[in-house]
Image 1 (spheres, rainbow, N blue to C red):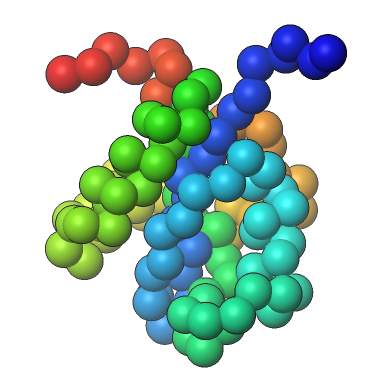
Image 2: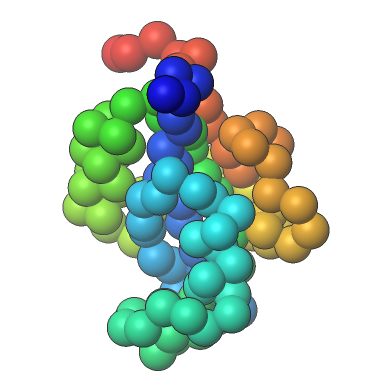
Length: 115
């Protein structure tokens, strides 16, 4: 039995025209690849939302899902402010190797104090 802690991610993807999508996954690299290769249907396929521009890591799925719902409830301007606080140029963090939980545009909630 594998007892290694799992990591869950809330991620934000964007299109070239900066349409944004918020999602949650337990495998960020795989999920970004699925969006990039057009393996998902619906909103991201319709609007060509493929570029990873922001993500957060969580140790518990419940916390990740709660954060995803919170971000989805935000107005666009607030989402943009969050994204640009860590990735002001909207660089594609998914190009090349996606790091497990660190790098520009990422936030590891396990190292933060609640407030």
